[in-house]
Length: 166
Image: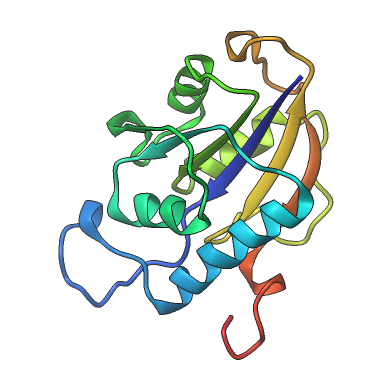
């Protein structure tokens, strides 16, 4: 059995004016990432390996989750689609992998992986910080196939933060 934590980066700061790849998280995004890490721990979903886009906002999101795990940072995950994400995941090690990426690819990947869409009003658009936990009845990530995942949870930061913080 393998478990995937599929996360879109938290809310980024559009006021910095720099290149997209270097855009950091904003204050709300930093709070959201910490809250997502707390939620994952409370649910018993603790990764043992990380896959992450090289963008600043994805790296910050992963770091603020607060897990001390080996991480593979990959340029191919920057604005990647489901094909690149599948390739990265097929090379992953660990029973529980957290993957942090970008939309629209991360939403497309989430929809492609599950046998049934998750029943949540925000699953379709996968807003910033959206996090899916899915399990797969496979022994190795290279065996991953579309439509085989079973959703074990889905959350967005707004559900975890006080209304004033969301």
